[in-house]
Image (cartoon, rainbow, N blue to C red):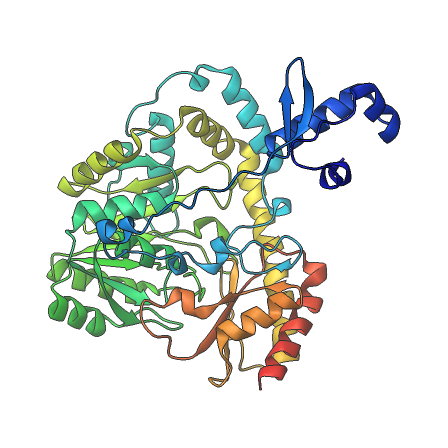
Length: 457
């Protein structure tokens, strides 16, 4: 059909339908659908009572949007702010750049059944409470209280706000607890989405170095003192991207600094369900005075389409955050909340988490072994005790973005480490996600990475 259009002049009338059906050996219904599609694309014009014609070429109007440059002013965040894990679309590549587990690692049967039941119930039509369903809020609060090590913070369901994922919650926390121009302390490296959310809120990021351990209490105290910051964003457990874990002693020291400085510690417990050799113990369990604001999401561990999470805070901070959440989203879908409750209260949920731990351990160890064998033992910064990623460091002469580009051209999608630093990176880093790609492709992936690295050397 396109050849017929190209060979006909603009405005030419196409042959009758009966002729076209015979010429192209298709049914009248198929021909009708093709004509409708081509008309939608602007290639044909249908005139009732007259026939179908090749569309006349129209001069495209060139709009002038330059006025927006002055009106909008400087951008808080540009396109480059969105991390590689979200921005890159490479469906044919081995996917080691993302931040979400593959479907085979998710409780698919539980999710499908829960969504079906939720759709049949009143949650499909009723507006839920602004703070969230009481049963789901109580479940999150119990998760904080019932973990290992004992609980003394007294968190209840009244301290919980249900949120549509932790990214949205971060934006609300930053807006509610700080003013544009205020400083916020962040670990470096840290989650790129938190960096973007802080910039979007107009905050000034003060980085403190973090490696395999937590930032030192002295460095944190100095950052608070020099900047006047009252917020510290952190990932104490299986940090993204490094996989590092705070020790109990480090946690106590950091909370002591926060108390002395009347500051908030924002605990992003993103990998709560991804412990491998250790469990995530929310640091809010050791906080009785409201210094910790706690985040946990089910999006990665249940389903990327079920964006449900929880924010826990106490005192006036909770009230301010709730106002921002209400103004921003009004409420989270009641049907998704009902499905989430259904999944996490099903006895099979705990069994799933146990299997998930075993599967993540196998994937982590397999990939780490290949990296050590093919790239050298010094490349892997440390073996994470949980989470979804390996954090690699290369010779400083290897540019991480160029390395990632070469890998992508060869069929491997990886994330350059630059995305996770709120300031200039101190070296050449790369993040490999071992939960997205199938393990049988790990050896092929590391081979591509090795070849790309050697070419840059």
